[in-house]
Image 1: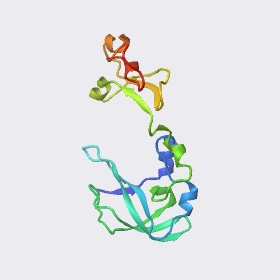
Image 2: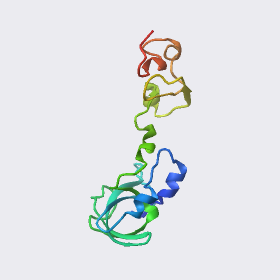
Image 3: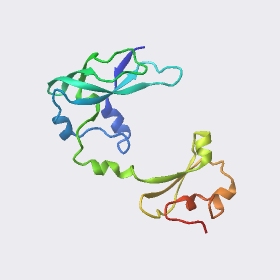
Image 4: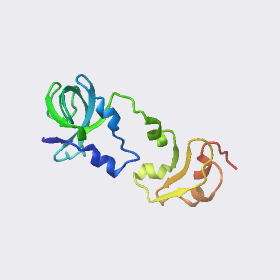
Length: 172
């Protein structure tokens, strides 16, 4: 099984609100002995859907935006071992041990609630998003629906309606 290191900047560019990467300020602080997390991706995903692993690497050398390090995790799938020496760039670092100076801005969605119907979870798919007025702290107002929910779930007020499940609301 062959693998490569993912460029996390591309992943962040595709999903900037949900795939966070360390700030330039944090990346400039990195030094020998620090741990950084890299994404090791299979060249060809396995039949069970496994695509890669995020693992910690201990930095052993720093030269501008290029690093040397040793794998500090025990891989679950990949054919490499703890202590394997690696070369990587700043573009491969998806996490550090340092606290982000503007981290609270990133946590916008961390304590935000949405409603997901049981049917979405059972089918593992959704086709509709419904936006109500948020009600209470942490409520986004969003509901995710499969489109196969019965009419009672969608129209009846009370414990089975999406809006009744919002924090701070009680059944009518």
